[in-house]
Length: 486
Image (tube, rainbow, N blue to C red; front, top):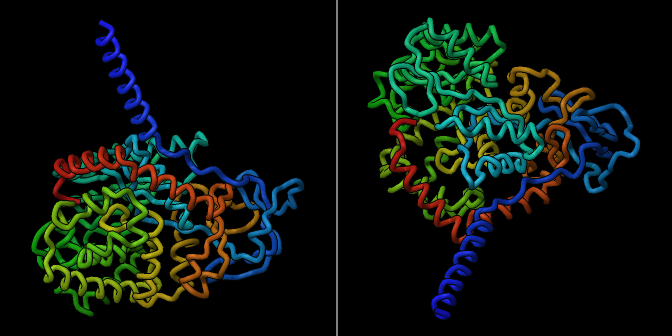
């Protein structure tokens, strides 16, 4: 009997140890905390890209806004003296992960602000759980992250490619659909696949009544000219549907063989004359081209920022996302040609004065939160868009397109305090984007070195033996259940 009791006690003790180990292993790091929400930065230079640069001396922040008040008893930080302050970067096409015990959404927000991204336009998430949880956490003060502007759902017709989809049968459904999206706290409508021109027109009209924006794909069977989506994503609709082999994302972003200079000029003129904006996500193509050197790419610093299951499972070239499995040299060559033509088009749109925004399509292969926007900036520069104009598109111009509060996107008294503090001037060299020393989010000041330490905490968490094993299993299961379209 004593041996039996000893055995039972030992087993119970081991089970308790395992339970404690599991509990500790699955306890994510606490969110990053700000240095101060009432502070003064001294001897700084304010830069609004493409507009002005002025030495202000001191910059004060209180109650979430920049202020002219000298702020007695406010905190000062000598290590930021002599720095450059610019409006925060805006990612105008991002996807956030759904809610899980891994707190991936929290980590994505951390990565964004650590790279100077202070606002995100969410272009839809697959299951509808990402945005509500993150918004609630930020409103309660539990989590700090970029301002989150969301579309909530994919609005499509005929078929559901993602669970988080509202189906539209005709223009008469627009009022009900837009009202539902607005009632759930979203600021944008995401027009998606199989919509007819009259449906898109009805969505735009209803969105305008509610001060909401409309972005989206150009449906496969339409061109830019036919669809008239106000903010076109991924430069879809440039290639005519009869010149694309199949209705898949890979075919649509890579099969640009038929696009010539005449077509590029025609699209440019049409967008400029009809006030259509473009969020080209230029880096999407270059990210997919990284599959050519997959073994080395997964070791690169930006890819290493994410949990291992992204590079080792989700983005694996043979076992990962079905869309990108088994790409051939011919696929890569075609995509490379398409990327070059898209760069030409972006430069034409810029020269014509058409509106451009920068977006990353985060969670597509090798597109990492925050880091992806820096890649997109370099993609615009490679296209020939001047540095200051690129930064203007990524900052003030994007803020102007966000619905709601208009005192946003400028480092001026009375404006909401979102900004990035750089040691060097990013308008002089894109390399200076790496010189971030602090980020101001909703009036809260974060030191970059503290954000980096918090990132390391998350990396250690995701690479823990138990968490890594379980997350890999879940990732493999999710891939099995994944939809064919994206």
